[in-house]
Each structure stands twice: as C-alpha cells, then as structure tokens.
Length: 231
Image (cartoon, rainbow, N blue to C red; front, side, top):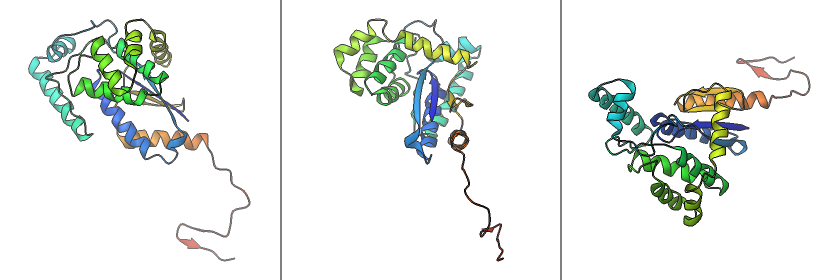
C-alpha cells in the first residue's frame, strides 16, 4: 500500500506530524508492506535564500505582535516536546527550501531519504542551521551519508528541481493547500499534524478496504455475543 506525505522543512507542524505518523506506522500490523513516499511542498517559493529573524518575519506575515508570536512559538515548542522534539525558535534561520527539497530527492536516489529528511528537520529546528544555505545543506547531506563532491555538484546545479515541481503539481491537482498532508492508499487524506491514532485509523481503514476478507463455508458452530448454541 502506498502512502504519500507532503511537507516542508520549515513547517513546525510538519516535523510534529512526521513524528506522529511514524509512531502510527510503527504500530501498524502490515508496516512491511507499506511504501512511504516523501513529497516536496514549498510553503513560500518566493522567499529569499536566507531570511532574517524568524519571530519578526512571522509577526509581519501573519499580522500579529512580536509578543503574540512568541506566545504561539512557545505553545508549539511545548507540543513538539511531547513528541520528543526540541524546537529552538530563538536560533532558527529560515529561508527558501527548494535546495533542501532537491537534496531530499537526491538522497532518495541513494537510498538515504529517511536519514537526510530527519537530519534536515533536526538541523533546522534544533541546531539553527540555515535551511537555504548550500554549504549547510552539504554538511547535512554528508553527515547523513551522501558523498561530498556529488552532493555539492547537485546543489550547485538545478538537478532534481523537476522532481520537486512534480510533487507540488500533484499536490495542486489534489487541491492540497497546506502541509503536512498525508494521502493513504490514494483514497484517504489526512490534513495537518493529527494524532498518531488518527493516522493509524486511516492506514488501517485503507488497508482493510484494499484487503477484504473472503469467507469460505457456511456460518455456524460458533459462539458470539456471549452465547453458544448447540444444535
């Protein structure tokens, strides 16, 4: 069964949603038969490669005061902590995420997509690495196991841009307008960082509908609802 997960590296709900989804998948009885496809989604394709102070930027973007934004980030930091994640809004360095998504697609071609994706999130939210900086992305890729020179060649070119655009075009064709967004079995959509229970329910429902039970023989000789009838 195929599950597609759209996200953006600078989206705080995406990291939380990713962790909750992974928890749900670890509890699924047929996890080995699930293919997870990590899809790219840029929340702000027009953003500069490197942005300024994230609190100030959010304040201007959503029209809230600095104090209100700080309260919002404190709340989401507390929610992230419940999932074992450490958010450091005081040192985060936001920016354009196209290169980060290209790095993820490159990592996928090398069988390292899980390692690179996780390290990207951790580096951005916890360590304050600038997500739009090529040198920082190379460091992340190499740390995850990618070859240094090949990684640099990819990031200094436009390789894998088409793959990023294809993911985004698929999202638009499905009327996906926000992330995280999970599509289970090409039928059930889960929008937002839902609980692990919600993710697990969607996964099980899609699986059961794709694998219906076929009964053989006639009903009988069984106990049900606390009653056993002997005929």
